[in-house]
Image 1: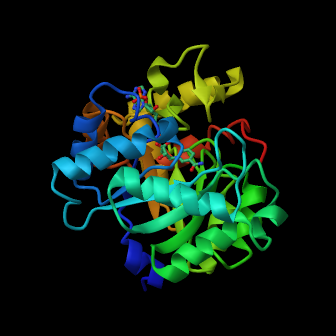
Image 2: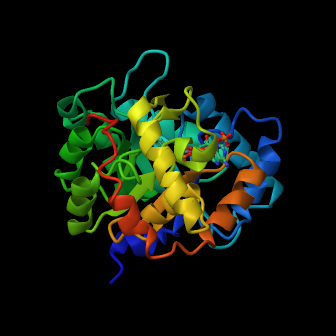
Length: 302
Ligand SMILES: NC(=O)c1ccc[n+]([C@@H]2O[C@H](COP(=O)([O-])OP(=O)(O)OC[C@H]3O[C@@H](n4cnc5c(N)ncnc54)[C@H](OP(=O)(O)O)[C@@H]3O)[C@@H](O)[C@H]2O)c1
């Protein structure tokens, strides 16, 4: 059965990620393609490219005469980038900035984004960032609130408060790292919407066949042992006529604990590639063959 928040957010299998959108020359045209695609959710944040991601989405929304029917843009509250301050007042200002750039009065979901300049206790205290989010939800300015970050131990603390409706983790539930599985299960038991971002580990698993010594996973240099595992996995996939990218995407989209997979789509070409990959059926034999390669080396420690 759909939870209240799932009904509100109507998550689609894929949410289009726009962290790499803001600084591209054809960004507004790409944003229009994202908003008119088959996918229903577009993810951004106050801080992506210092607000450019929200700005180009806002321009595209204006060009289209408003958000297309059934499409939702979700965003995130960010700290003051100059000072690191991330408290209630900053969250309210962040929301004003986001909605003004997007040209929207309300947002279906606003998430606490990368709360690394504050402790969990500071975020939860009266006057803290979470109070700001709760106030926005109480006023109806946002439909739901979430927490979006990397380290699982940090996110788990927020999930356990039962204050949040949604959670987003990245690079920790992929073909090579499923360390966020417990976190996602805990969130689902609480009826939260689970966003799994970066199913390609930020790029490595999208272009494994061409990955060389400078390859990165989770925005850091990929260790040699990981590259070795990825190349062997890639050969398994090729023997079955599929790309590792398609299988990496399917790993997340077929998961019962993931409500929506957030995939970076910074150009119209990437969007077209994504749609082609989503249409690929992974042969059943691929999964046990990948398992037989052994557990991939751990890359993310938390
Ligand atoms: N803390 C957070 O809230 C948080 C953190 C991480 C991510 N996210 C969200 O999740 C979204 C997805 O994350 P992500 O974009 O970092 O990771 P991702 O979806 O795993 O990977 C996207 C990256 O893969 C590359 N790629 C895709 N197809 C490729 C191909 N055929 N050949 C070479 N490279 C290819 C893209 O490169 P190009 O740049 O060349 O297109 C892009 O940089 C973000 O946009 C953001 O919305 C949120």
